[in-house]
Length: 99
Image 1 (tube, rainbow, N blue to C red):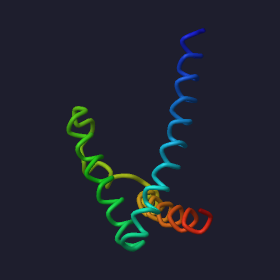
Image 2 (tube, one colour):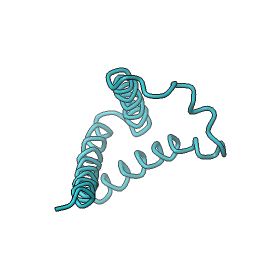
Image 3 (cartoon, helix red, strand yellow):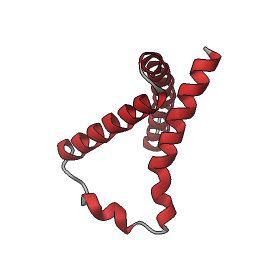
Image 4 (tube, one colour):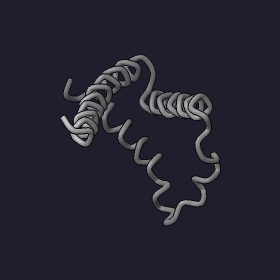
């Protein structure tokens, strides 16, 4: 296997892991929503993700400056976080309805 092939295979494994983790997260979030409410669950999910990302940024050597993200152009690209919230809400709703 070539070095390029190894990176390709690693990328596939990461993609598979990502899909599996997202499925598990959806089940967890739906279960939390049954004991609280959808907006509090989604808020907690996003807040805990923020804390994990900030901690990872500190642990991994603080690559880049934190506020560099505000220099992104075009600015609509910064809506990725809002899309993450939409994904969280829709996954919770669909998992609850589909079982």
